[in-house]
Length: 489
Image (cartoon, rainbow, N blue to C red; front, side, top):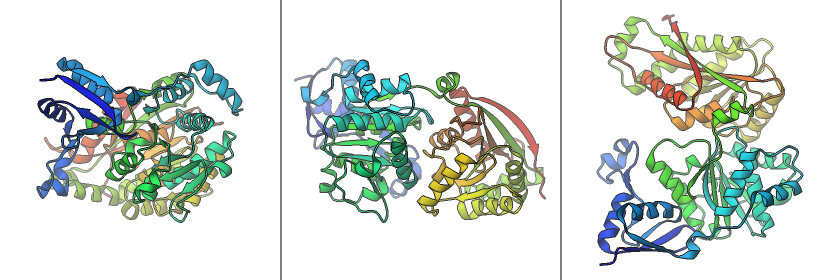
């Protein structure tokens, strides 16, 4: 019986693994995981799905191309032999010196940092990477260097996928600010825009293209993905596997959600993780503003806490976002802060509109903006641009529109008005305040937690707050607790 695994290339999305049946079963077990939260999905509850994701298909013997390093690890641990077809792992010869010389020809209006050059070189050499680079580290510049190099190699057409229409506009304008002729080379595609173009690069959202026919994806020979942590959705997996001619597959993300399934799916679609730098290193090197967190723990009256023992999560959330004294506290906090402030909320109708109403009523001469999913993309971009020039504006925005990717250098304060335990969302939201501005050296996050504890009872959202504090510890952020008595009002 042979103990050798033979890896051959199917296309740019998949490889074929040829091995004995017993090894195939081992391989299948090795690459099978429960999806986080599977027990809450309708498919699992209705017994239509067992909650597992299987990354090796025993019927076709296919796997995602980016998982080859994990197969090599699988074989090493079991003393199996492995043969990898040479064209599976094609690489480029590209040195730091060549990269620096190429960057010089771009006449960029600023200096490229060392870690950005190293990330650029690693991407071109390996063709497939998942670049883990924290928020405000300049991922758009790294992507720009990559696409300009690919363009110089005379590749035909490429796709840059971002999660929101705001980021389509921002990428387009960022490239222009680097000296690129975006109008000539870039096609913006989202709702209301043409689906097809002969331009070199299509900048789009996954929502705009995931239903397109297979021939649409076959026109592209490279793909870049910004904020790639959102590429775990089934529709995005369909897009990435449909791009079977795309030999360069570069994904960028500021954070992963800490689960093995998430990381392996993304590495399978793009390639192995490469960490460019860390938030602490960027702060220590003064590339980012210094940062501290003020944890504002709101303690509710005992009578309310006793009622909270009978609440489920949704009831607790409804009480929190609809509680008048709490919203008044957020209003007073927002109006007391100096500099530009971003107030992030989760529910538009139940919370966001009320916060905007009460803050806007007492704004005096301050500019107050309200942004949510229904806000036109051009309006969002104009608000971002206006805020860059303001020193005392307040933006009240939903997590979905302003927690991810929006670049505001002149932001001094971030307020978490709604509780969340999502590692990705929290780190992305924190990143909104880390960029340096002309009149800004420090950023402050105000993390509002809700304490309904009584006896041995601890409420849901306070547990979520504990999870956020663990993230702050992991990232070595400075934080301090402030206990505040909240009256019924």
